[in-house]
Image (cartoon, rainbow, N blue to C red):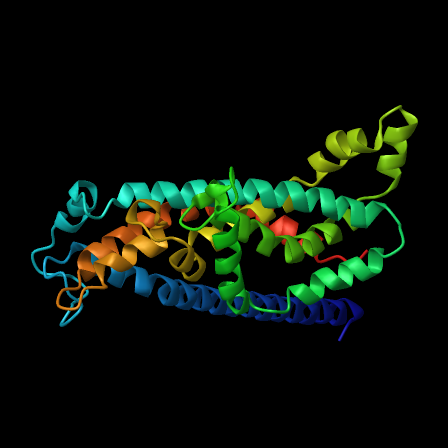
Length: 310
């Protein structure tokens, strides 16, 4: 056998090995894609299955969950019409109350946490570390332990002349509780984000003549948009869906938030309107879904960078 034949056989053998390797890599990639698609489909099914049943209950004319089917016979929009026309259950007012309380709470939490986190991140003073640990320890106790004390606190605040708007059965008192309860954890999370921003930016702003607050306002805050959006989303979601605190602090139907008001549909002893309840739950979830879809990129970025230890 000549040297040319040997070289040809070696080249063919190398080409076969390369083709086999390519086929094995291609098969492996296809298997990985198939596994990922299966997991994604399974997760989507697991997530959407309850939503589908809620939609089915909202469209069902039986107004009950007994013998309910995935596709209800005689589907109708009467349950949705009831939400807009029933004066005894002001659904739109409840939703507006929830949006108002959540938005104001988010604004207060983001503002105070930004100022506090910036101070803990950039300044050094005696008791700084102790203050951080104290904030963390306070957050270890669940809010339910303070329900009684918060109730009595708002009751006493409402008796003070000029502060009745912060007492019981007021949105001001509810916002006060929500805002105070969210400061600890959010301050820690935002501090971690500020620690990831180089201090040289503050120093450069000061060299250019900016004050400490101007450096914070015009240099740090624009870079902190992801964590600010994260704080706003978490605060809105937490307060919008809260039931326990709002149920204890609010007494009149006109002051109810959405979570509290919806219980009126299923609280009756002899009649529970599950169809109307499901329709209200679907409509009530739309604001949160829209906010999350709009700000989801900032949410992911804020959580990932806020986890960096400074």
